[in-house]
Length: 137
Image (cartoon, rainbow, N blue to C red):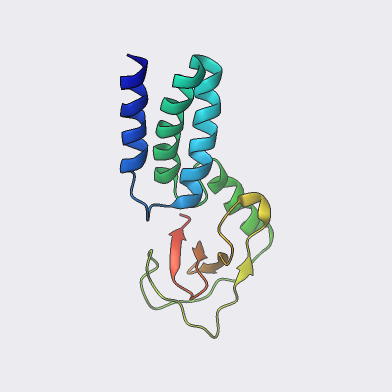
């Protein structure tokens, strides 16, 4: 029974898309594994890790817990919004000039090179090429 549970949980974890929001996945998996281990020992850790990874991925790059805190962080800094005529959506490419990009503090655990800006009064995370990778509504 334990082996079947372990194999099923491993299959779930491996089935998660590799291109999924990796930061949320990793932190979700870590947290789920710890909470699962606390409740159910080694098998609980495996199942909790798989469930936590899925939950972290759904939460986005910042993860569900960090999104409100990050929005507050940006709001407190009074970052000037860039007026953009295009659609503010994941995958949109922002101009290289005219937009001010800011470093994301380390305590948000995003990938190196991830920056943020505010576009049409909406905070967004961008990759190193200026593509929006998360919209923080």
